Image 1: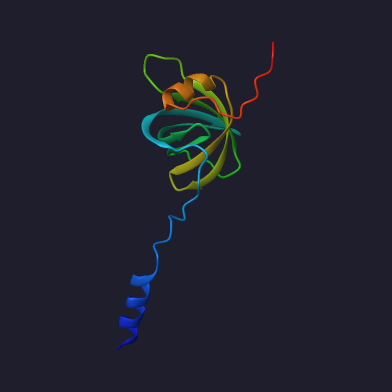
Image 2: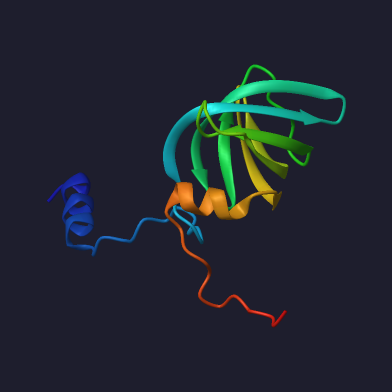
Length: 127
């Protein structure tokens, strides 16, 4: 039996491994809406391509390097005011960058847009 055939037989019998991609706390949804951002002496506009409660991926001609702090405006609809967020660039690759939200001004509106409820382990403090 040839070596190639033995390798193929071995691989066929192996159990399928689960997907090795990173596990996210919140699933990202595919979107396409405008984003404006400003950070460390540079402003830009782009298109958000995916979105979660904790971050998004932005395509822009003005992609910024990793670890840049940003102020974002997410234009979910043309009629509503944008959702404002402070964010950090986690990665950048050409015209794309992934950002992590550090603070969201109207988190409830973003949760509603994403269809995400309140975290189950959220502590409710008496007023």
